[in-house]
Length: 469
Ligand SMILES: *Cc1c(COP(=O)(O)O)cnc(C)c1O
Image (cartoon, rainbow, N blue to C red; front, top):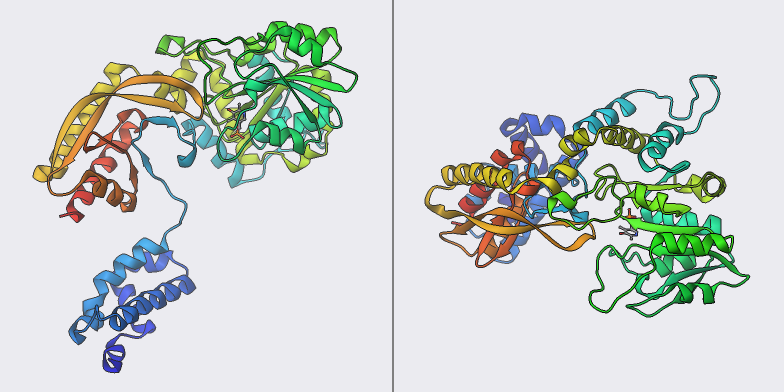
């Protein structure tokens, strides 16, 4: 066995063999990282020898090991955070980065970070300006609110609103709205962090105006409504509408805070989805503070948008948490570009990928599915049976939880392996492809694949099928 260890090449020999085999990889990878990879590769081979998996000295030389080493270096040297193909049909997929940005937003990000900017510079006076001024007017125009503020995400928006308006006081909220959003974001926990005490009213399925009235006392700081984004109470159920709750709040001199969750500027009822309230309608109904995510149905970057009345928003702006939760220049650039598209609804529907994916028509999806299927047939040959089947997509991100969107799925039934194995293999292709398993097959939903991604998707599936044989 000691002889076998000695048959392995040195780290330097590995590096120079790699340099020969793949000069581009060597040029693009920091030298210390390559050295570490060569060491890890050789350690794994030493382990193979110890475990009796490598016994033939012929297989331990540089020539024999190079293909395996090159593949290992290629796989391990790239960035960990990378592009994946989303073939799940879940449009707002938190694990895959939620919204894909519009080209306009991507261009704006590039411009914002390639050079200096007027991030906090007022070009009219040459004095210090506010980073929010760039989007505040747009947000007011699009929602009808008097003032606006943007922070890191919607969880932060809820936190700072509560901290600024309710700390040390009580917030009245319906029991059925004390939700956990996922990723352990629980509304009651955030409220407690802000130093506000929660005053739960009503029952899980019903709450009445009188419940709020009865709960209001001298310690009450605000009334709050939380959009039950990711679940629905169906059946025997009542809720107090925003208008009515705003009226109660204002009669007692209190603000009404509404956490809208997704928060849309558009009405999606034309796409077979229920008419969710738009941000504008909630502002018009009298909510003093409305918070929502930038990267859910809105289709922009991660952000927590807060709109409302000037007096209340000013109080939130002065809160010290504002500095801790502020957005960076890249987010600001992407958000402004996305909001500008909303100034023209037709443009928003066409140019913002999240909106376009949600509103894609069944015909459009069927055509894209056909194109993907013929590419797959060509690339996979007889290694799989490819068919089109009707199916359903989801909006995701806790939005429209009950509503499925009709789509056409591409069904891949591998000839020589289980579909589970194909799914597993696809996690390791370049780029990785994420799809669904259903009905003894692997399924791709064209709703969340861009036209430009179809060739990559077909290549990934073909290469994964190839490896499984
Ligand atoms: C998604 C959601 C949040 C959290 O928003 P993030 O932008 O992910 O921080 C808060 N409240 C509701 C109702 C939500 O749906």
